Image (cartoon, rainbow, N blue to C red; front, side, top):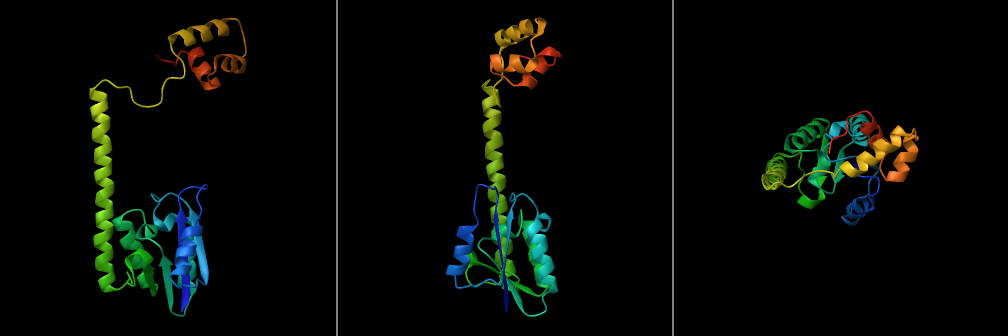
Length: 194
């Protein structure tokens, strides 16, 4: 049987080494490992290495399986995961998710378990979003300012305007005042607000 492995991390500062090690420790020897550095919010079929993996799976004629460590490696949400598993199943590929045990999620029983788990994961993400939005709304109602602090206050903006009148270069003003050139330019162009 031809064994494919797919691993993914969200940022370049992360490594897929632990996922590869987990697959090996589970007793699988991958014939090919595909690795993406891409956000989990990107649908599976839009991930560059996952797309290459799908091409390889479709070209392979002998029995094949795909090994992943977690269900979220197969898609961004429940519907994406289900679509990915259906595509893999149509290509004749078994799908093994290590965190689900010895269950082929492309099988009927595995598909049921996968749908339930993917639905629960999606619900957890939705609850987290609701909590975050509720917290932001509460903070706004209490008069708290949200977001990034202003680069300059009115006093600093006045000083920048004075320097601009003296024809000092924008880059020099930015260095002297500890702000970005874009902030100086917004003040110069009248687009800055306190």
